[in-house]
Image (cartoon, rainbow, N blue to C red; front, side, top):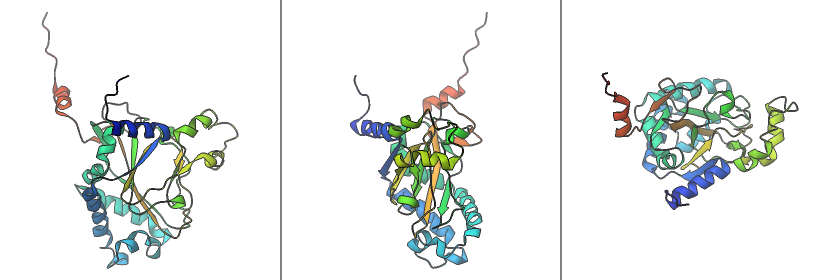
Length: 266
């Protein structure tokens, strides 16, 4: 069979299909710098963070923000970031070349980028094992996950790769699995703990079980996440217009959307 894609795309495709995720170096370093600089600009306006260097702001956040104030801080920051008209564009540019290989080049993007901040030893920001499709998301969506710090071990997230998922597929929701803790214990020996450095991007399939645990390192995790899908692939609970927005429609698609078939007179 003749391959119609490049060797590079084929390699990315095979890796994604095997593992259910990709970790790659961000090639557009300028866009990544613009994203991080926007964070610094907004955060350093807050009195707790004035005159701090990047490492103190991000890896050492727990020295300046109390656990009880973390979620309000995070939500306010999400709102401020997403008000910037270039934030989503720069975020997309960080992953564009990989998304075009994995998802397609006519895309919709989540309208608001999410942010996770996980302090050391904090159990208030846990995301138990789950797959987004279990709660109504489309299996055609891919998640782009970009850290602002080096993420490793419990300072990162885990995922059950495709190669292991098949082993559990028929028993994930057996009667013995009464809660998410049972489910994690069932699969934990086969999950991959993802090592994603600042300057890298993770793209993963949200059909696969994933989550995080208590951060046992002495550093804070900062990571962003945003969903993308092909504009013409099937939607589920999250619809175009309310959750997704088209970002890269090609001219033929724009023309086709406006096209009206001539009325045939009898």
